[in-house]
Length: 399
Ligand SMILES: NC(=O)c1ccc[n+]([C@@H]2O[C@H](COP(=O)([O-])OP(=O)(O)OC[C@H]3O[C@@H](n4cnc5c(N)ncnc54)[C@H](OP(=O)(O)O)[C@@H]3O)[C@@H](O)[C@H]2O)c1
Image 1 (cartoon, rainbow, N blue to C red):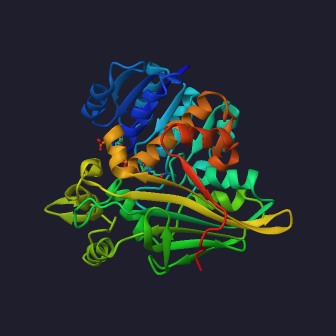
Image 2 (spheres, rainbow, N blue to C red):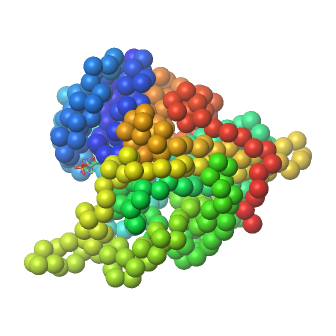
């Protein structure tokens, strides 16, 4: 059917490449392009020889003319951005200039401000519409599948959804005292930022990690959960009919939180540049350099993730509750694609989202978040490509 240009060659990109090769009917050809071309070549060496033809390229995705030249040379039908959120706008600029569809998994945030919001990418709506191309934003698990779950609940089970609790549990153990499961810089920026939740038409900010609860997760058990700000709340607040409350919860173990507190207290999580031996360095970037590479956690991580949404609302005049979730096993993911479940649960939906656009099912000019499309073909694809989901109509609720 077509050709995708995959930008980035980290943990998530590795899964995207594996999954594109499993879906060679759609992905006849892929080009893996990133800053460090040897990582692209290593992925190619692992997967070459199947039905999907693989090429590689070096690119600095902060540089729009370089990106344009690459897109003009490769001539892809779509660009899958699995580099870092800092590159979202430059890659969108290059897609606009070349009239090629765009997909990513995380919304833009400027490097010098740890605050991710859709406003920068939503500002491209008119230009993408006029160019006749699609931008699909946030096609990972959360955001991504959590938004598909929301659209599915809205379509099939509710007349009005009044509240959504998004629950992200990782019960994986990698054996290190402290490590992050995806890019440490992005991960630590996310969890040290203020929390927030949506209630009655507005967002309420909270101190980082100040709201805690406990939830007994299917197949995982009881875990401490903490309220965080997360990007899908911003678009769900606009697109889900009748919505009054949205919260996002993530599990953290005590050891992770204690390490994080110490690192924060000594200034190691700061994104303010400092002078060190005559050089400007960003403490958080230095910390990233000394922490384990998330891609190396695959063989060591044991246990499961459980990510899903609990919806409460009304159907035919009666109250209804619905929980939909996926459970993913770190070791099973490693056996299949050589990565742990965090990269897996992000890479599979990125491949599916791009295939929705490539096959025309979700092809619409403009800039969209996932819940704006028909969820059914995506839900089918989740079952087919390794992220099966489960439903519960009487789940325990979070107070
Ligand atoms: N929605 C979700 O559920 C979800 C969950 C987890 C992660 N994510 C997102 O997924 C994305 C990838 O995460 P990851 O864990 O795979 O990160 P990663 O392992 O750090 O990989 C990032 C890749 O991007 C490349 N890159 C960085 N800057 C670049 C530039 N200027 N030009 C070209 N390539 C560049 C890196 O190149 P080098 O190899 O040279 O460093 C690396 O290969 C991130 O945006 C993250 O926020 C989304």
